[in-house]
Image (tube, rainbow, N blue to C red):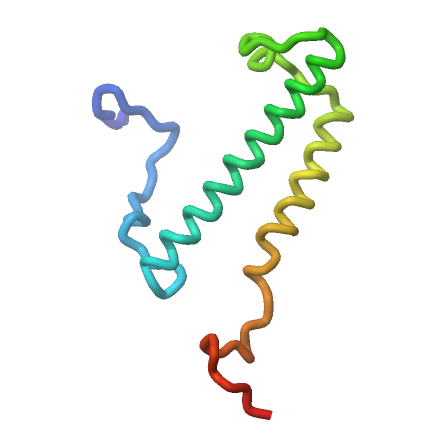
Length: 114
């Protein structure tokens, strides 16, 4: 039995539709939006860093770097490994604050009770 698929759309297997755009994951839709922005900015920063690394490598090895050269660049296994380590270090530096203990957090300016 074949399943009819909308023109221009395809899928490998049946799926369960989800309404994730309307879901609230962190208790407040504004906080969810801010988290999405923070994660997207981190991804953009890392993409730029990788691109800079490629440009630097091309400048060292070829003496020039064109858009085509950057787009066609294939990193070595050693570069991939180093980039992964650097990416994980960046993730730790940038996002580790999201896992800090907030059990004693209080509004700014509120006196602490000892």
